[in-house]
Image (cartoon, rainbow over all chains, first blue to last red; front, side, top):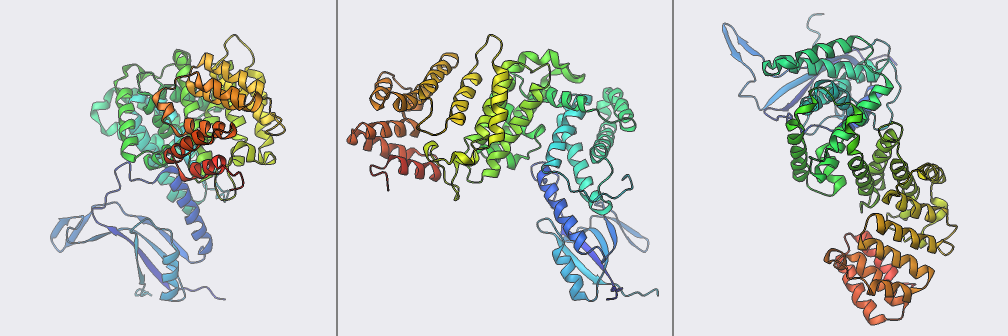
Length: 120
Length: 419
């Protein structure tokens, strides 16, 4: 079986303004360890599909539009992008399955986009 | 940030939780307990960083050293940002230094954990806050997890934690961490907190045995550390450990397959943990020295009698009666008299037991508790005083704290033993 080469971009979205800074709301050490076990299981299952783990994105930033530069976070957006990742899959459907099986916190949403290979 | 090599080794159970306790104790020792909240934030961040980094890169060669370094760096960053904490800079410099050298020695880790335990057991901190503070800082439980285990609300746990932290901030002395010897006067409070911690697990009416077990295991873990250090290697500590192991040995036997509670006489003694009994007896032997006979000695002695008895019938009830009397002398409570009556009923008969209870005037907290009514219902039933028994039975059932206890009472107190 040949490895799929079509790349998909995963954008991790979460509710804007949903702060997780209150100490009582943060995951406990035990929960973090359980989460790590889930992530490792996901990684083992899809290790051939993960091209780039991407990164988490810090909050804030700038919106550049010509000479106009405004501050983020962007008030009009209901959700903010918290991170990204690149995977390969045979089809959009398969990419969706990979995203569905990804362990996520409550309210986590993943936008799955096929990459167009526009520069090839 | 990782050490390169990818290890697929799985983390041991409760690794993050226990590392949390270790790191908080070590870093609080370095920067002072007054800053325990900053320290906890730094440790929380280090674990969160590990969660991502270790999934992507695999486990570092020495995960504990990795966590220490990351938590240190985070703490240094936070302390640097705050000009008001300038006077902390010398300890900050020391912190940075430690991140580049050998981060820890096993002995120092143990000392730091014990120091933190003694700090949690400061007499100035309200009693109910001590156990919460220990569970949070030393055992790595979150506020919701503590609330679940102590059968109280998160708001209540939060309030108790806040009160404990206010006390820690007010305690000016610990910018430099006090030597353990200076804290030895708090040993009795440490014993009490460990005892309460154990009982919260052991006596819990939680249906999930894993949750009950956790608090017992934490108490045993900390008590063992204490027994291994000169600050705590006294007969009381050994007796406390004996009683913990001897109770823990019977934990699995206390519930049936469906999670229902079982009476002592219904328990399958083959399910009791022989290893735990052996360890408990060894600690009990070590505790039999010195002049002081503590309540822990008495309770461990009673637990040992049960563990070593071949059956309920062949239990040395006269020994247990005597031990309850000794227990009542070192730690007076009418509850001990109630328990002694139960032993006397098996040894000398129900009439002797009822005579003992008739002679005491129980305080309201006991006479209105389901325990008092349950014991009297049982004794009166066996003495043929059905009408009195029935009255106590009804009250015991209505006051029972959980359905599991109610089921057990119904079985035990029913007039027809087969119902």
